[in-house]
Image 1 (spheres, rainbow, N blue to C red):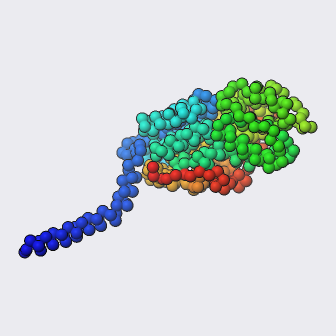
Image 2: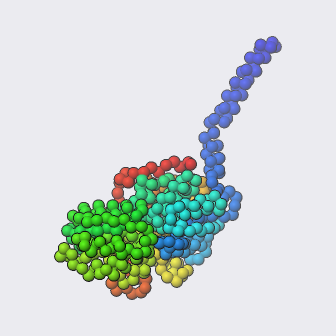
Image 3: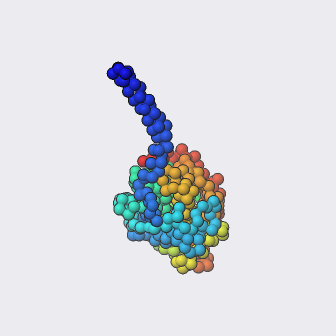
Length: 449
């Protein structure tokens, strides 16, 4: 055989082998890549016998009371996921694939952090949990500023964030992220739920004065409530921004007296709401007649913990909540019983939403058969469930916002106990508070980060 023929055969052999190698690698490479990616993600537990959650809540600051109750609920959720205690809502949630043996057979552990009700502190705490503690999921927060900051971080780092108490429209609006999910309702829903009740009780000719917490939640709540009331025919006299954690709100309340307003709307939360409401009552605002009408105060976002802090001052005042411990559906009763046995008092709405979030994440992993975030995310997107309070609920795929019934409540005039502070006036069906996802903008971003 000549050198030329040997060279030709070698060339053909190379092409044949090369083509075969390319066929062997290029066609299944998609599958190989996916298999590799599904096992190569941040804080993959691999063969470890446990997985770790990060509970990032305000243990200090203006929202510390809510944070303490969130942490109680998270710890209870971990017990139930691991098969300890009475199971709580794991006995009522449908559909449910958790088996009471952790998640995918791995025991759930946790670390905690203090957000201090500050975005920068929350960001640092979450980053430490992800990088040093190896958490697979971060959850918590009682401030929308915190939620937005941590959600953005989790998107960058490929860790799912199951938001705690966050009511700003922006969380699942302009600041929404693929790796972030919210069970809690938002400011738009509060306005939509309150509107018909305000019209019926206070009429269409009112003048409103807003005091507003100066950050994303306060801004969007002010906007939503303002849109609702002006839609009824009310006029807005003033909108005044106040710092979070101000303590003394008297300098902001004094101008209300001579403003011509006959309604004060407190877009405050936590200890800020307790303080501003108490001081408004001390200024005798509710005893005044303005424009021929009895002066009214509205607290658009209520919680039992805030009501406890405000005491007698809360009586008769309207607002909305995400959930109330007095609901009589099977899921709510199961949670109240379990939480009460554990801690000796009923849970707040902050405790409820965080408990539900922990179970929803765990169940999504079980459904996916993996902890690989993109697959877990796909299980949560569009997920429909029931048996966890507030009726049938859906995690809308387009913006990761839960849609469910909303409660309009009033400060109880005749409470039967120290916890019976908010009376449910109306359960507003989810159809009344739903909206087009396009109105708040934003982009979820990619599954792979």
